[in-house]
Length: 189
Image 1 (cartoon, rainbow, N blue to C red):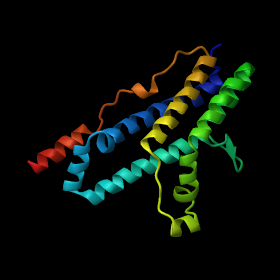
Image 2: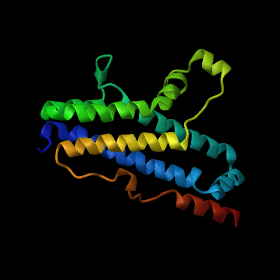
Image 3: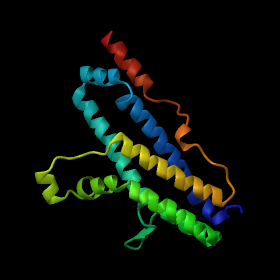
């Protein structure tokens, strides 16, 4: 059954955002995680600046991952989230509810570390935690698990409407940050 026109915009927007977050994660990994020599280069050039850039990336990922797991509405405002897509799917294809609900529950359980960070640090600085505990970030494995669960949900939604599986994690980017690495290396030469 094809997706009804009224739901196409919502689906395409979340589909694009899912691809974008995968591209951004790929860039982050290229710059900060996969190549130790990049870390050494950043520390040589301007360590303070690159620490800030890395933390901005990490906060952005955390907030995105959490937003996708938020309810479809809060405080009278509609949110564009996975729950919103699940509700649209059930409206058009009632039999899809159980499968999408399982995928949504799985996604939400996979992002608990992110939700704790958002709720206690990024979104609302918790008084006790801010004063008494050190910030614990999520791991690379946590992020990979969250992205995998996101892909599973999005592809389940696609399957409900007869669309083929999308390889969100195979996104091709115009840049992965290598231009920055090359420019920085040339400055040191």
